[in-house]
Length: 333
Length: 301
Image (cartoon, rainbow over all chains, first blue to last red; front, side, top):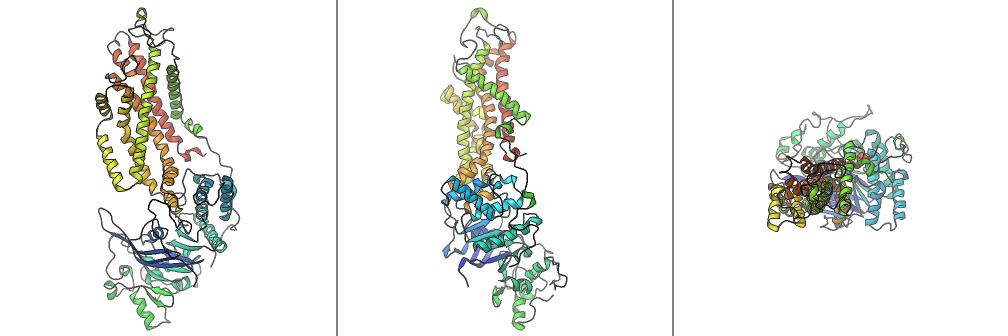
């Protein structure tokens, strides 16, 4: 067990609007990331992934629960600048909106270096900016470009270079490839893999796409309506999912290997729109969409328990099946 | 950890990156790239240069010099705009009046622009209370027509150069507040301001380096438009006798004087009116040109 960089414990986040219902975006999420490892967070739109990302980097305060970076609690700074900037950085989904349209690449990078006193002279900052660009496989000719003169993939690399400028320990990647062309995604993913190897970074990789997450992740947490429903090492979570929602997500990934056995539940995922606002149904929040739902699922909310070693799930049916026959596949095809 | 297939090795730049060098226009070139921008630059340039020349004493005649023998002369080579009932050269008077108008309008817009921009940024960036107070005051000012407001202020403070500027300027503050607050509200939640917060930038750095420059364009456009309205407002005030007191020449007052003479000497009305119209149209067109030019995306071909 390595050093824990980030730990979130029972984090909840509620948004209260003047009119309209209380929105509970996160309902008690606990995660931990070790040094040099990657935690993948998967879930569909509206499950609270991006809210979690903002909480992890201290952009917003948690309603309750704690987020700790290297053992120190994270909270949004009041007025001043964040003391956590050197530890954790965020890479946004849309690279263009995350870059100031009026700053050239070198100005954007130099500003970060200047604020944190990482390079004192103008020349030193330019040289460091060029080195940062090289790290993300962009040549020095990009230094003097404006964001709108970059392609999506190039802009995302610049955003990654800017995040790396402060030499953070942890990068929170909020769907870093989903705004990019499919052809560019692989490049950015490979870049992230290489950077992790070279710099020993830890990642929290957030995605709605299991296929993306599994190329990087050591651990996976699957979120549904603001709560983690399954968590564990990426192999077991994907290959022998305990929670029917994970199984449905895994089944939705196109698999080129026709010999592989694909789990399928009765209904395709998304056959019933998830309740995005307001309260989820009583009992298990997934039961209206679940093919395995039983009477107990409509009344009792399952807890996230360690059903197999290191492998957690919040599902009544899976819990019973694992208890009865530990060797059998938890979710039948 | 597995690695996805990729068409290019991680170290090599993809083909798309090897492009021709980026070509950009300067701001000035972008400004004159459109017909409106070009026309605005020319008109404003002519008006401003002529007004400054007049302020430095570069008028064909002394504007206040009265020649009773040459009263109400039609335009001629000696007096291109003709003369008024006192025999003063109308061209010289118009130029002097233009300078006075520009001076007042510029000060008014400076007041409105600075106060309005600061107010708009405060309303957009800081908390709910600040915003509520500023926006309620703005709404109240908005409810009163600017010219009526200016009239009331000048009536209270007395006519004069500074009071006119103040009166007009306060009337246009709400417009700048509105123009600035909207973009600031969206910029505050924009990706790059959030990114700046995560990167550890202070609030003041975000305001000064990322929010202000991104609303500066909108402010410049609004300032140009406000200059044109201010010239009109100043002319209206002096038309009603609330402008700078005589003997200072004033375009509005000249129009007022000419209204009884226009039947016999049309040029006495035409000269100041044309000056007002040219200045107003010029600043309007310049505002349009600025609107196009301040967008950095418009400057890359």
